[in-house]
Image (tube, rainbow, N blue to C red):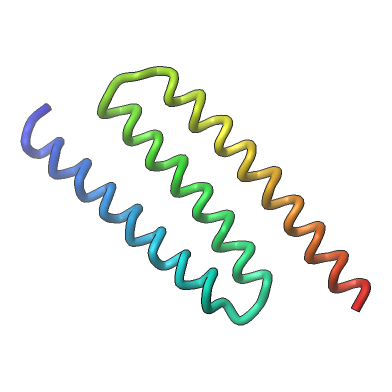
Length: 92
């Protein structure tokens, strides 16, 4: 791997870490539950990005399976949270 590739990977990791930090802020200080739910969904997507970059760096193909499973679990979790929040709004 050359120096520009290493720099690019480091910048990608820093960008994803910044996204994680902003999402964690929104989860803790979000004015509504919907804001918190969206931030949780974004963190799931960012984790998939981390795994994808790690796959490109290491060349380990099984990490793509991990990213795919993480994306599916994150999606199902987001749907469950949205259904819970919708039911909570209807019952109030």
